[in-house]
Image (cartoon, rainbow over all chains, first blue to last red; front, side, top):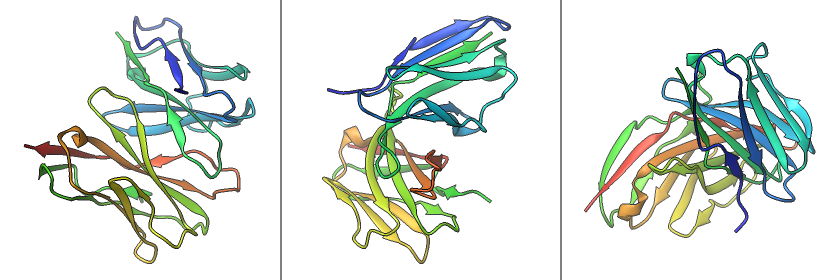
Length: 113
Length: 117
């Protein structure tokens, strides 16, 4: 059963530490998305890639967040330094856009204390 | 202005009844897509159904159907014969400018559906 895999599932870290979240998209999908979910803001698009090239990262705080796709099987989202307001669930999704749905991973629940 | 509006924060429905979850959207694009996702308490996001703006027929997937009224800019989700396992958060989402390079989804705030036995 093809699925998007995210690691870690849960992460608790101290303020100021670097956090790296990883995503393995579904094989053959050409587009990878990063979303963030919080109670206050709901689901927000942070960034996305098409054929590994970054297309839009306007939803991402540039000073501390970075997203990369070093190869077709791995996407990463890094926060450095992390802050308590970064606490959220971070979802990776992949798809064969533009005319199909995106499939989501199970998310990484990040808590910054 | 919000692009996706879900006016029902929560709903209680009796098992086996049909459920309609409301969604209205705002876009000036001609080509767009509308999506519904389910998020159970376990947290994953499960795709349910898709409707393209040029699709003339309402989309259906098993017990799910999308009541698409383009002139009213509404895309309500209908769940027939609800089951206890349908209890979850439901999100309506839109992709604007389909085919034009804008591929991310804009989500509504969600509706928390609880099915009662």
